[in-house]
Amino acid sequence: MSKTIIVSEDAIIAQMLDFLTECDRDELARLTGEIFGGECCYFPDGYHFYPDAENYYGAFGEAEND
Image (tube, rainbow, N blue to C red; front, side, top):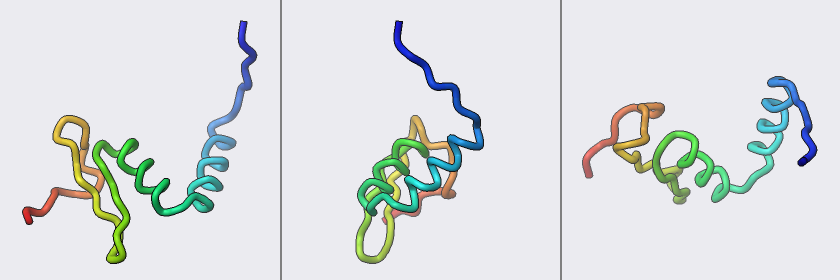
C-alpha cells in the first residue's frame, strides 16, 4: 500500500501560492490553461488565453473575435 500525507486546505493554498509566485511565465501559462479550460501563452504584450469551448467556464469573460 502506498503512503499518504494528509494536508489541510490552508497548507495546500499556501504551497500553491508559493509555487505560483516562483514559477516562470511559461509554467504559469500552462497551469492557467489547465485550470481554467483552455490554452494560455505568454507574449511580450501579456498572457493570451484561448478558451476551449467544452471546458472553459468563463473565468476571464468572453473571447474577442480577431
